[in-house]
Image (cartoon, rainbow over all chains, first blue to last red; front, side, top):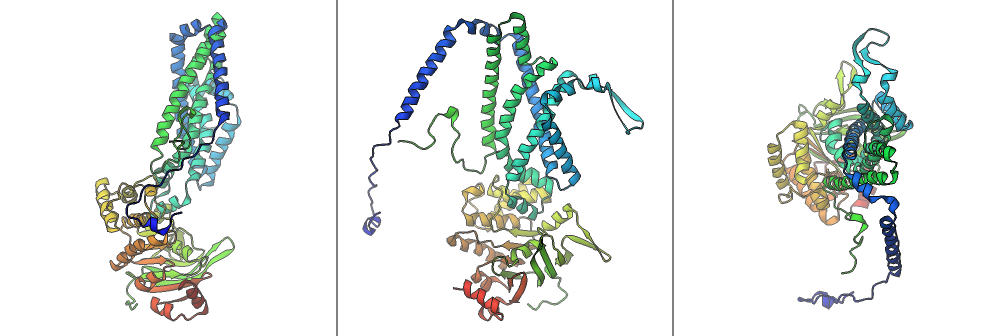
Length: 306
Length: 260
């Protein structure tokens, strides 16, 4: 590029920056214009079409029944995901165990709970009292030591939590397993060479690194769970969707009430996305971010023009 | 080496064989490493030298033969004439007395340099966090990285990472250090800093088994040089003798290729 004399100059002048006409992107301008027109049309229809009944949406958005349903949805999602994540990690670790019986149990668990509809599982757990009015601990075919009334032990809400949680654990176990397998084998060897035991290596070395792979799909699962809990309406747990259904069952204004539910689901999903961003940042310690995630798809993927 | 026979060898290997499936990688290895000795192992790739090194701390299971570290059988306990496999916990306890340095460093990327060095003393030996930190900082200083305790591995050069890895192994106060091609993954200009740390370690009296391609290091620091090829020890002796006057054709041909 430069002759030897110039590189050895003591006080070099900065090189002339390249001045060039950048590549034009007429397609982007056309797309932006089209998007603008379509957005205007959408807003126009939302505002002018009286069938949307925004007055009703506003009336019910913060009504106590909707808010209590919203709270129940949050509780249901949180508890089910806690069961799902914790049990999912346990099942994943069991699946990778060297003990053939333990790993078979984990495989059968995932096979069964992924292979049957979640709706069936929820109904089953909620109405287990129909199948087994009492649950007892004892020797099979022999004496029983402790009795429980199934209805008291597993009320409807707990049944829903169990149904969603146990189902989720089966999916989470595969996500966690993929995360564990993504960690370089050299990490385990280095820790083994230092004298660490298997469980400690898993907890201190492998899982923290696996988290980077585990978190994004787990965020997906949480958001999916938020909306799957609307299935609880079949067992009369008063979650957000059930409450909305009950209200429009009375006043028949189903469009504005479905809008109410959708608004709340969107709000919760947005909050979860923000939480996910911070958790991901926490577990990316020691790795240089290749490219910062873009918010709302705005901002340039490359450094762009000065 | 003219040690009296009453001294227990740090490593003793008798007829060690290792198969991967039907492939015989080690075909009967016999050797001894005395305390304080530095043994360098050279040989073409695929000769089994790394596999043998990994057998010493039981990262690989022997197929046949016996291996002792400091007088204790590796991986087994002898009761009468029967061998009993050791439990994971017992194997781990023995490994904690042997330091190992890998070709690809294998530092824990989610921990800083200091945390990498502190991890095993805290988790395995139950050392307090404060004591482990003091020790880690001292060790990082010893390998010339006093200014990098808070750096993550990704932020360090290869040579710096390998020196952290050496400090991490030293933190467990090992009686034996195993080096598996410690400079092979480094850029040429970074090799010297790692070898300098290893040379210092040898001068301090550490017993070391070093699988390496660095003939200069083997000649200057090694007490013994072992040439392996195709799963057997072809030749061993004092490094200067082996390098200057190899006895076997295979040794000659290999040395001819590496000594340029």
